[in-house]
Image 1 (cartoon, rainbow, N blue to C red):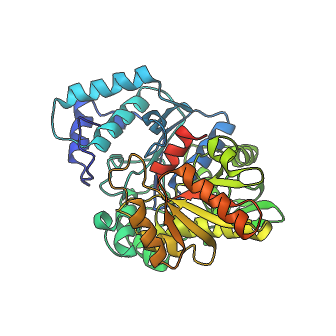
Image 2: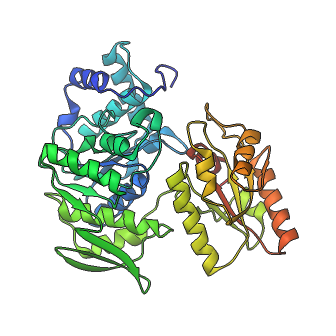
Image 3: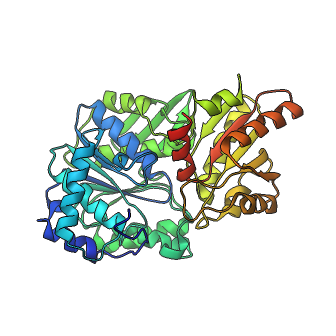
Length: 423
């Protein structure tokens, strides 16, 4: 991190130069599932990994950012890359790069591809870092399949101010004659994806048109032109996970050369795990501080559409078991905090803000509280997570005498800090 700038500079020239110098490891990879989108990439990838592994297949996976340590980004055969292997691969990339200009994300992505090229596997799940067209992962002529999850507003200063522009950048991963799995989208986003697909003759398989998925009597029902599946509900919490799970199922049923049975899909659905995605914390100092009967949830949602999904999940929980909801939130100044908070109007009793630990672009807690207040929410800055939990417990006790429901959210920096220090 000290050797290379963390700035985002969307171009492929530096990445392609280093890959060529290393002997083109990007041409020696297992079948690639390339995944872009604003929200849902990580969950969709987690479902894919769980289902493929349930079929006894070996899976590599690349994701970003990490939560607790960098090794999480490079998963080799289902396990995070070991320390010695990571050190060796990074040293090799540094040596071959020979001091040439390259960003942190670019050289670490190249290192990941080099590691993947040297370990046999049945599939590589590759998440886009930002955008798609000029992302450092977009260096393949022909992946097995591409996926575009839900597109919303995020990173507008890099991708454009409209859904049309953002969708155009995401659709940059589409490849000639490679099937593409597309989540249900707003009309503006889908129209752009459809136009980009036509330019490269990429066949689209679209949610709501070519397949459907819904909950019925405590089961997930998935149906496409190949038939109907009656499956258990996803192991990840939230109605939105039905869409993410269905993306994974659709991809597995359309990807050439990949064949897994319905039992593996069902097992993978039920056993999936993905930290900090509507994860209920079961132990640790924060859970102890919240007290018996309280709920402490952790989610990495950090943009308006992610906030909308999180708010909907909290509303569903409230319908099943009413509790006073308190947000503990940290955010970065690259995000639309006001639009994020607007999702929780009439739902959250109070917002307690903290400054995101370890984030260079963190919004100060006091400033973030003012943003929440501007959105019509009661908000108060706090010095620490522990203090925020204590204040939520006290507020709930004074209001209703019942334990609270607490959602810690707003940035993956905060989520990673919680998982490292408090669970």
